[in-house]
Amino acid sequence: QKEVEQDPGPLSVPEGAIVSLNCTYSNSAFQYFMWYRQYSRKGPELLMYTYSSGNKEDGRFTAQVDKSSKYISLFIRDSQPSDSATYLCAMSEEITGGFKTIFGAGTRLFVKA
Amino acid sequence: ETGVTQTPRHLVMGMTNKKSLKCEQHLGHNAMYWYKQSAKKPLELMFVYNFKEQTENNSVPSRFSPECPNSSHLFLHLHTLQPEDSALYLCASSQRGEKVGEQFFGPGTRLTVL
Image 1 (cartoon, each protein chain N blue to C red):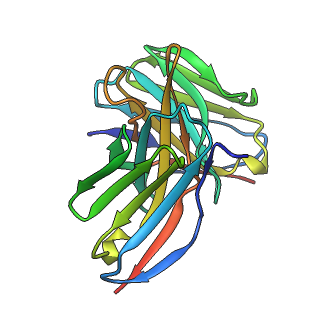
Image 2 (cartoon, rainbow over the protein chains, first blue to last red; image 1 turned 90 degrees about the horizontal axis):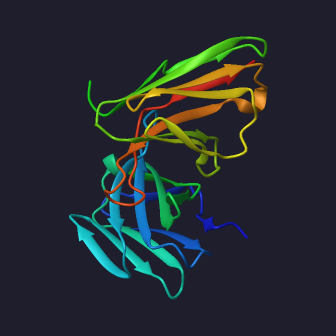
């Protein structure tokens, strides 16, 4: 079983739709959960960061973590064509000497005007 | 220049060539990383450097050779690569003691091996 599972998509939605992106994981030691956004021809950039179960909201974006189910989600409200990108989930645990981060494969999102 | 920069942005090389990828971070971070990103696969961590010392080598073939002369610069020397090594190579940096797992990425070098 992979440590992190993420549906690669692609996911195509109309402008204004609510988008739900998800990842599951198997390592219960993960404590820090992130969503990165990657535009074409660019490196990933951090979008959301959380270290506990529950919801975190930032503008149109809401990150949700359910540690009991080992499931994280990213919701995008009122999606815009500029949200078209690949979204990578990532999760980290602290280990001796530093930390270990595992990334999902990324979900490609297309928002049509 | 701000953030993390990488050169070249695109590279085409034959299997017998030797080339190098360069990464520079302008964030004052003390850890730097090389990742390989292939289509529809998760980011694969290749190397980690903390304070110029290599702390992780994720079973990377010896045809990839990293070099970290100081905490701001990171190189990846390439020789006798294979076509399956074609991918986007991403450099990242982070600051130990800050948010665990948060990394800042460069734009990547798109490598094609013929």
